[in-house]
Amino acid sequence: MSLLQIEGLGIDFGGLRAVNDVGFSLKPGEIVSVIGPNGAGKTTLFNMISGVYAPARGRVVLDGEDVTRMPPHLLARRGLSRTFQNLQIFQSMSVLENAVAGHHLHERGSVFADLFSLPAARRRSKVSEDSARALLDRVGLGRAAEQEASSLSYGALKRLEIARALALKPRVLLLDEPAAGCNAVETEEIDHLIAQVAAEGVSILLVEHDMKMVMRISNHIVVLDHGEKIAEGEPTAISRNPRVIEAYLGVQATEVQHADG
Amino acid sequence: MRLSSKVTTLLILAAVIAIAPVFFPSSYYFRVGSLIFVNGLAVAGLVILIGYAGQISLGHAGFAGIGAYACALAPVHLGLHPALAALLGALLSAAIAYLVGRPILRLKGYYLAVASLGFGILVSMVLSNEAQLTGGPDGMAVPELGLRAVLKAIGIDLSNTEFWYAFSGLVLVLGAWLALNLYHSPTGRALRALHGSEVAARTVGVDVAHYKLVAFVISAVYASVSGSLLALQNKFITPDVAGFMHSIEMVTMTVLGGAGSVLGAILGAAILTTLPQVLTIFQEYEQLMLGLVMMLVMIFMREGLLPSIARRIRGRAE
Image (tube, rainbow over all chains, first blue to last red; front, side, top):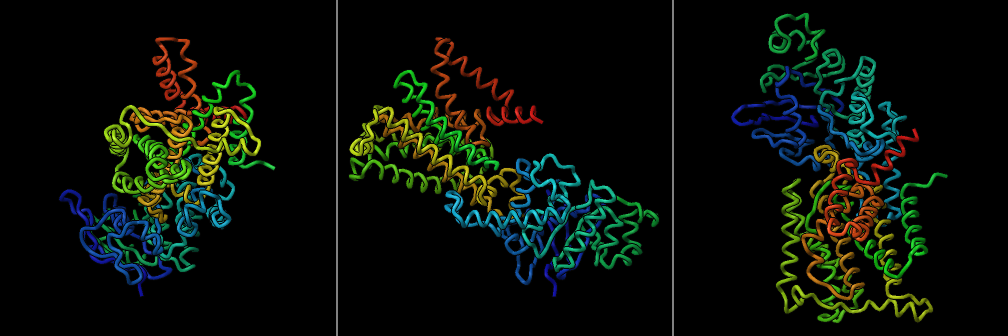
C-alpha cells in the first residue's frame, strides 16, 4: 500500500498551467525522484505536496487521509517534512538550535512551563538537544554544533536542513536539491544518508539535478516537462525512454551522464 | 564552571540594581531608577515580541494604559486591593491582546505596525473620552499599594522613592528571568524559528499564527504590569500612559538597546530614560541631540547598542 498518493495535482499561475495532472505514489521506504528541466514545475509540485501552495486541482493522500491544502504545520504533525531548494535556515540561531527547532513537535509543551523553566520544560529541551546532536553527527556537522548557522558553507547548510527535517522523525521526507552546491565527496555522503534514511522506512521524494545520484539511489523516477508528467518508471527504463531523452536531455543520449540542469 | 548566559545576565542586572544606590547623590536618583525599571519591564516584554518573534507593535502603550487604569479604577469601583487590580489589569490585557492579536498578527511588517498603532490610539481615546469614569485628560488618582507600610511593620523602613526603586527593580529582575527562560525553551525556539523563516518554521510543525499570538499576549502582560507599576508609584495617572508617544518610546528603547537581547533592551530603556536629563546641558537643542544620538546608534550599530558592542569585544578577543 502506498504511503503518499498524488492524484491529478495541478496549479495555475496567472493563466499559466505551472503544473497539470501530475500523479504518482510512494511506498514506505521508497525513494522516488522527480526530474525535469528547469521550470518543469518540480519545486511547485513540492510546494503543493507540502502545503506551501494550495493546488487548484487534484488530491494529496497521506496514509489514507486526504491532506490536500492542509497547512504545513499540520502536515508536519502527520509526519511529512521537507527541505528547500533556496535554503531556509534560521539564521540567528546556532547550528544546534536549528536542528533542535526541527524537534519542535516532540518538545512543545505548556508556555507556562517554558516561562518558569519548570523541570518538565528543561527535560523536553534536553531530550531535543540530545537527539539533535545525534542527528548533527549523522550529517557530519557534530563539530559545528555551537557555531552560528550563518557561518556554515552552502553544502553544510544543505546538510543542516536535512538534519532539521529528520529531527521531526518524518514518515515522508521531501528533499529539494539536497546535493546542490556540494562537492563530489559531500554528494556521496548525502547519497549514503538518503539511502540509510530510506532503509529505516522513511519514504523519500527527491528533486535533484545530479543525474548520477538520481540514477543510483532512486527506486522510481517521475519525469516532468512543462508541468506535465511525461514519463515514470525505474531508472534504467527512464534513461532509455526516448521522450525523456528528447525533452529533458536534448537529442544526444550521451548527455545522460553529464547533465546537471 | 562557565556560567550560562542566562545566569550571567541576571547576575549583572541584579548587581547593578543593588549597587547603583551607593553612588546616588540624592533621593531623586531612586526615582529615575524606578522609572528605568518600569520602562525596562515593558521593553523586556517587547524583546519577546520584536526580538524573538520578529513582530512589531506600535500600540503596546495601550496595554500599559489598561494596566495603569485597572489600578486606578478597580479599587474604587470593585473594591479590589491595588495589587489584585494590577493582576486584573494583566488578565484583561492578556484577553484583549488575544482578541486583537488574532486578526492583526496575520499582517506583516508595516501593515502590522499601522494596525497595532490603531489599537493603541483606540485605547488612549477611550481613556481620554470616558471622562466620567477616568477623569479624561486630567487623569485620576491611584490608591496606595500599601506594601511599604507592611514592610515598615516588620522593621524595614524605606522612603517612598527607595521602596519603589527596590520593588520595581525586583519585578524587573523577575520579568527578565521569565523572558530569558523563554528564550532557551521550546516556545522561545519556535518564536525565533518563525522569525528566521516562517515557511521553514511551518514545515517543522510550528503553528506560526499560534506562536505569534503567544508572543503578543505575553508582551501585552509585561506592558500592562509596567503600566500598573507606573500608576502605583506616581499615585496618579493620565491617558498619556496609553499614548502614541509612549508606544514609540517603548519600541525605540527596545531597538536602540538591542531587540534580540533582554539586557540590551533594558540598557536601551536606561539610556532613553536618562539621556533627556543628561542632554539638558544642550538646553534648547536637547531634543535635537536626542534625535541625533538615536540616528547615529542605528546607523552604526544596527543590531542595537549591547549586541553590537558585545560583537566588537568578541571580535577583538579572537
